[in-house]
Length: 484
Ligand code: IMP
Image 1: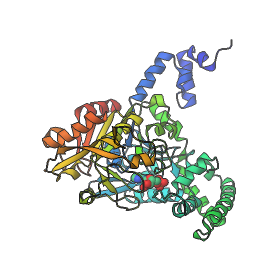
Image 2: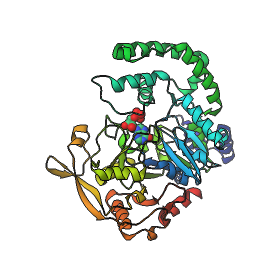
Image 3: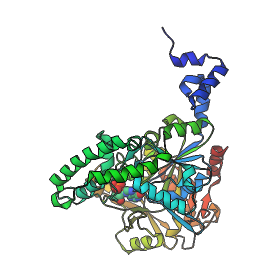
Image 4: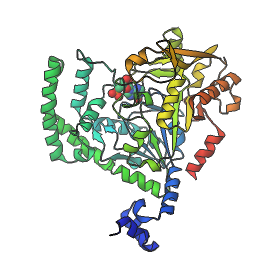
C-alpha cells in the first residue's frame, strides 16, 4: 500500500522538514511533524488563542474588554457579523466607536483582521478606516480583510428595508445594514466575495444580474415601497471602492495560522451576543450569523483544536435592542433608571436599549453553548444605587419551574422569571481596581453569579476607561501564559 504524503514526510530528515515548512510559509502540521510534536504544537497554539464574546444580546461592553486584553495578542480577528456591531472604546480623552473593524487595531503592534465569516460593506469599511486614520490610528499597516468575506451591496439593504416593513412579515428590528440579506445570498450561493469584488468584469456581471433579480423581487413583493436600483451607478461606485479595499485584502485564514505557527497569539472578537446567534439565540429575533464560539472556527479559518480559551462578557444586568423575547425585562421605572445610568442607547442606531435583571438560566445556557471558561462582568457600577438587586434564578412556565431555555418564541414569552433578591451595596464601585476593595455586597453579587452560571470570573469592569478594571489574579496568570 502506498504511503500517504503525510506519512512520508513524518520520516523525512529534519532539514528536509524545515525546508518544506519554509517553502510552505505556513507550517502544515499534519504533514511535517511527528505526532508528539504535533500535539505539543497544537497545545502551544491553544494556549495562545482566546475567543471573547457576548453572553447575552450584544452590547455587553466587549469593545472595552477586547481593547484591554488586546495588549497581549499579536492579532485580533472578527469572525462574524458586519457593521451592525457597535464597539465603544474609550482611551483617555478619545472615544472610538468601531462597527466593522476589530478593536485590536487601536493597539500599536496588534494586527486587526476581518475574517471570512464577516459580511463587509466596502463603503462602510472605507469610512470607518478613514475615521480611524484621522484619529491617528495606523490602520493601513495593521488591518487585513479576508478575500473570502462576503460583500454587502445596496440591494441587500433594499431587501431588508422592504422585508422589515412588509405586511405579514415579522419585524425583527434590525440595524438596517443589509446584514441578513447578505448572509441569505451567501447561503444561497449567490453572494459576492471580496476576492470577486476585486475583479471588475466579474463585479460588473454580478451587479447587473443581482440588480435585475433583486429589483424584480422587490417590485413584486413590496411594490411602490421600493425604488429600483441602478446597476451601472452601483458598479462605478463599488469598482472604485474595490480599488481602495484591495491593499487590505489577503488570505486571512492563512495569515492567522501563520501567526500561531510562529508563536504569536490570536484573539477572536465576537460581535452581537450568544442570544442573537442564528442557531442558539432567540430565533427568529436574532442576527444572521454565528455569534457564538463555534463561529470563531468557521469564520476565521483557524481549526477548533487550535482554539483554547473562551471568555464570555456579560453585563451585571441585561439589555436588548430590537424586537424579541426578553424574560427579565423590567417594565417599571427602575428600568428607565438603569438605562439612564448605564447610557443604554445603541452605539450603531442610537435606539434606547430595553433593560432587565440578570438572568442566570440564560447565562448558564450561554456558557454551555460557548464552553466558556471565564466570564467578564461589565457595568457593575450601574447597580451602585440599588437597595436590593433581583436576579432571575429559574423560570416558571405553565406552573412548572425549570431552568431550561425554551427554543421557541411562544415558550420564551410564557416565562415568568423566578427571582431571588440580593442586598444592594449603595456605594460607588466606579473605578475600583481590586476585587477586595469592592463592597462586600457587590462581591457577593458577583460570586453568586459565578457560582450559579458555571464560568469563573476573570475580570470586572467598573467604568468605561481602560484602567477602570479589576483583573483577578487567577485570570491574570492565565493571560500571562498567552503572552509568554
Ligand atoms: P441585524 O444584525 O441588523 O440583522 O439585526 C438583527 C437583530 O440583532 C436586531 O434585534 C438588532 O437590534 C440586533 N443586533 C445586531 N447587532 C447588534 C449589536 O451589535 N448589539 C446589539 N444588538 C444587535
